[in-house]
Length: 80
Picture 1 (cartoon, rainbow, N blue to C red):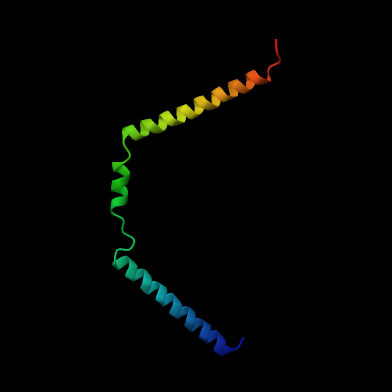
Picture 2 (picture 1 turned 135 degrees about the vertical axis):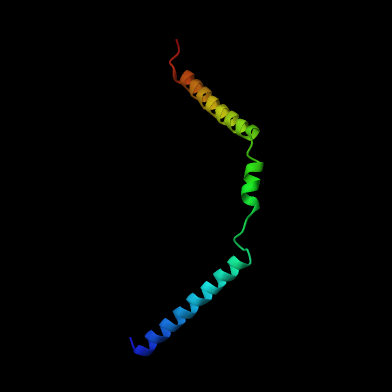
């Protein structure tokens, strides 16, 4: 490669890097990455009742699967 092309590539990459850095600094200063209500909403909606509902749903799923396996076993058994 010629020297001029390498110098041009370094200049363009430096310009683009500086542009990205300026955009990041602007976004941080204007609060683009701030989410103050995220953790508040998570704790507000995560209570004991929600947890109990989740446990009950998982128990229902487990009981349904066990019942389904039991029915399948009864179908596969030879007649008496």
